[in-house]
Length: 270
Image (cartoon, rainbow, N blue to C red):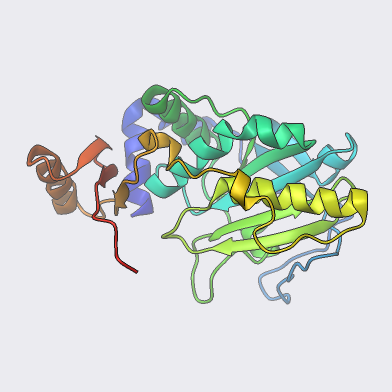
């Protein structure tokens, strides 16, 4: 599926990948050395975020130094690939809530298993189709080194899951969340979590279940203007591409592109 999706980017005029600087992740001297045979690093809450140099859409960034040197917190969130519907909805939502993170002295940095040129083209597509300009950097992790270092891969899988690392201004990992590939994250909940952590630090208190949740109104995904549409899985063959187009022609679904289709779903009675 990944190769088929990226073929779209090539036809859009970004196929000169060989001319683009290698977007592989480099490990800084102070970071633990990771090899294919070495024991996987399992990040835990309360330990330092491992120091690493990453290639991003904003150039090379040293984590966590780039943010801790500015006295900032940061939220690192990962994605399996560019040009995928669920990831696209999350990027739009993170950007639309970016100012709320900034008010908490917190920066955002995304990650996807593709190269910088692919990230840039995806950002352009998002702006053209949803009018949202992505401002935060996106890490290029085409070789999966960051995903392996931070234990972002599912058991027996090779595609990065939807991991979230909340790191404070001292470079300490304060929270870790994992979501499966099929289900998007609740961005207001991540904001709520950052607020809770900072409240704990400032006032030396704990927060109860659903703390502040009643103040956060659910309005539905931003990319669908608040409507609770569900995503039709991206096509994985030419035949399925035609099926998506036929679905749209019959009025059974709507599509921004053949890889980004969605529809209404009767609310399940759980």
